Image (cartoon, rainbow, N blue to C red):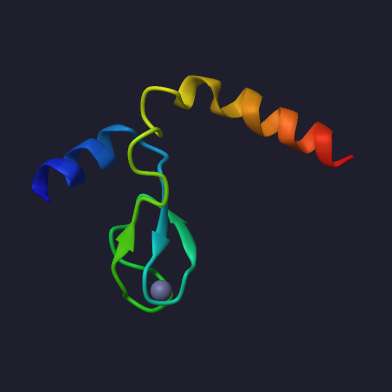
Length: 65
Ligand SMILES: [Zn+2]
């Protein structure tokens, strides 16, 4: 778990989700709202493909319009 914590901090902005209340947060290992534990909602495929993430999100926005 120490390794995961270090990687998370090195990545800077990383989306995490509180397992207790479901709130999304950045970086925080503990929920700023309820103090619950946070987890990465997208574990495996997040790191290597993230450079395409913003394009994927742009496409999703365009599809919704
Ligand atoms: Zn919470």
